[in-house]
Length: 182
Image 1 (cartoon, one colour):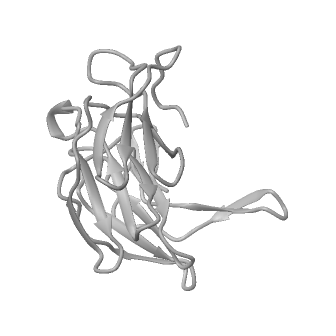
Image 2: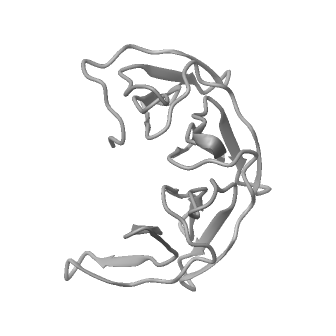
Image 3: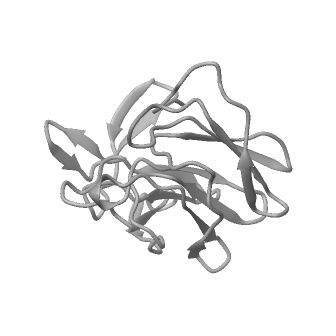
């Protein structure tokens, strides 16, 4: 979804046919954006989060209805962010971590989307500011945020989110510094 091509932000999407292994044009988003995060939030919906429109980081989101293959505006995040990551939690929440705000400021903040009322609220703070990080579930109790860029250097640090208390603590260091990894 979106991207930058030769300095131009795109609002287009492409659909992959797993049968023919070829791409076809998909629906267009309402806003041109690059550096956005994408997450599947239900069997019927995918959400596109934040990004950069060429002038500023975005707090906006867009929902793709997989039945109609059309986008609609989604709920705004509490913070403008691009270069963020997102993970769906089992309790009907979506966690959006890190990213870059306006002025190239890296974020240690998170946003939590409550899927039952489709509203964002501020989430817990990580121990480190990071953009271009990755996020993955460790198990039913924990989520791991890895690497990224803090504005000065690539990171080998991690943060572990305890899902019961919704608090972060520093995790183990990786063997190499990594940003924009998945």
